[in-house]
Amino acid sequence: MMKTERLCAWCDGDMPITARADARTCSARCRVAAHRAAKKRVFPLELTSRDRWVRRSATKVPLTTVGTPASSTNPRSWSTYRNATESVAGVGLGFVLNGDGIACVDLDHALASDGSPKPWAAEILRQAGATYTEVSASGDGLHVFGYADVRQGRRIRREGGYAVEVYGDGRYIAMTSERFRGAPSTLADISALVGQLTA
Image (cartoon, rainbow, N blue to C red; front, top):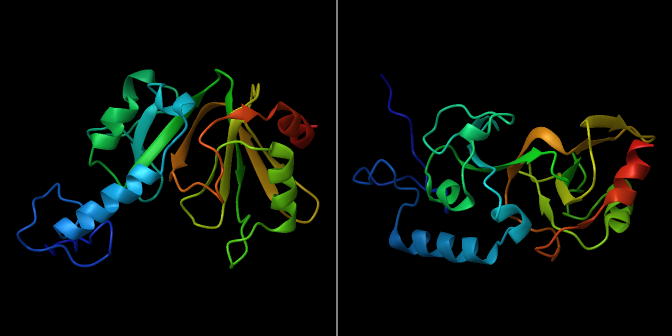
């Protein structure tokens, strides 16, 4: 059986043969750099104070902190933010939306190759206002978080060939903590935006 190659989570270099099984970085230098970067990336308190965190696989499958499948509708498979960040299961974090008024507007393929928002996405960001927005795991999408009453998630096709997804319950979002262009670490009321998108 062929051994799976392990790469450093910070520099993508090969992990040393002597590295512990749960090690995520190849050296003390990479570990310190990753830790410093993580400290700069702060999720909103409105999210971290809720026990609705999961881990996620590279293919965005939700996982418990011990690496078993998690569910976006089963609270027993969720965790505190602290426990989720301390876990080494999967490759990252996820946050579960459960109908308590926190919503996410998911904008796929919203960023141009230079990292700037495409015109349609820029208009949505303008309407959202100052609220926590992060770059998605794909690197070219955006997650806009805020407060809104979203009873049923949906994918909305818009003129111009793009689609917007709006979720508020029974869904988990793969989180990156990569804030988009200095977005605040707080949530704003995005009800007007959601109403406009879903009208």
